[in-house]
Image (cartoon, rainbow, N blue to C red; front, side, top):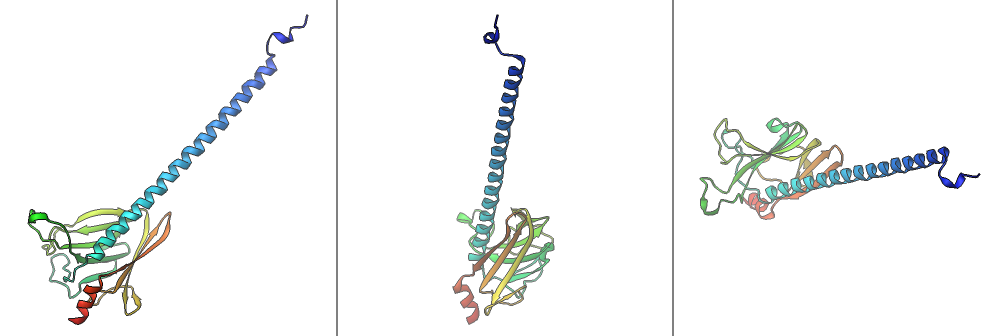
Amino acid sequence: MDNRGQGFTFIEMLLAVSLFALVGLASIAVLSSVTKSDELSRESSQRLIEIQRTMLMLERDFMQISARHVRIDGEPAEKNRLVGAQYLFDSEDHGISFSRQGWRNPGMILPRSEIQAVAYRLQEGVLQRLFTLYPDAVTGTVPRIQMLQSDLTGFEVEYLLAETWQQRWQDSNLPTAVKVTLIHTYLGRIERIFMLPDGLVAEQILQ
């Protein structure tokens, strides 16, 4: 009597199990690939958001730069309105310091002016923004630190003077523009030129 129609043979069962196993492995591989792709996409988006925030902060500071002379660590005011050089403020690359206006203080609630002393430096691969509550901070005042951009291997700043880019700034006036280059571990070189307010630069020339 022929019993072949009554069920699967052992070999057929092995083939079916093997097939299901292969399908399962393929599904896991596809799911893993999609998950990894999503993670990479999120990381990339986060890096871009971080870059945008950093550039926005730089733009706000430069657009509201003040002609006020810079004081560093409570020392007498520098002749310069902007100080920029390599390794300034213990930076691992370039550093820059200046004063900016527009630090909001509605109704003068806080005992400070609307002028803020700021500085930028690179430490441990992170672009930091330093500021103090008062533009004329006393010697030894520890600045507050904002962590802006991570994953950096370089922070370069150049200054435009008479159509020539300078590596450091020693002039008593403000430059026409400031070029900032961030060297990112994953995104490479990111460059942005910030034009300083024309009226402020022109006012200095007339003085």
